[in-house]
Length: 261
Image (cartoon, rainbow, N blue to C red):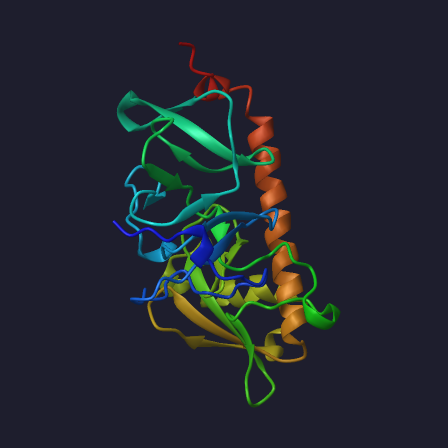
């Protein structure tokens, strides 16, 4: 097992653009991962989150705290939660929170495996509203090309119930669409045109590096304006989901019933 002492940990800027899918090198690289919703730092580790195994049940990344350096800033919840899984099985989770939002959990209080909730963390600090010079830091998935157009790397989540900007990482902007991935180009352009306040002639769509990947080219906006409008739409979607969760919390209260010893 690899261990890195605290004295070896280099000082890091709060604006971290490391890709979650970047290959790991022989030299330990310490990365700060942030809460995607609050922007607060949650986890400092030399593990590359995109390379960690996933749980089949909920897609959580499995981080071995004995194998990797782990500094966790989230606060443990007082009591465990019971979560209902397929087949009626109940799973006990010892959760860690940022504010009221769970970001990770363990199956045992002192267990070595830390399960990072899918979509909760990012290597890009979304909460840092301004970088050097007062400018909003823009993730690398949104870039200005040599021609002056803005290129946006899109990851399509197809067959969703509603259209939404679901995530923004260092690598891509996740967009949920209702049509299948092979038939959603028009829906994608129409939706992002509304989000970005652009007309169709100001946008063009290129094929990406996979069937779910698209490259959106836009003109008439700066990279900062594109990011700010996408981020605003993502925040509106997050708040909508929170309202729905709160609305139905009474019906699902038994799922989060504290474990009584």
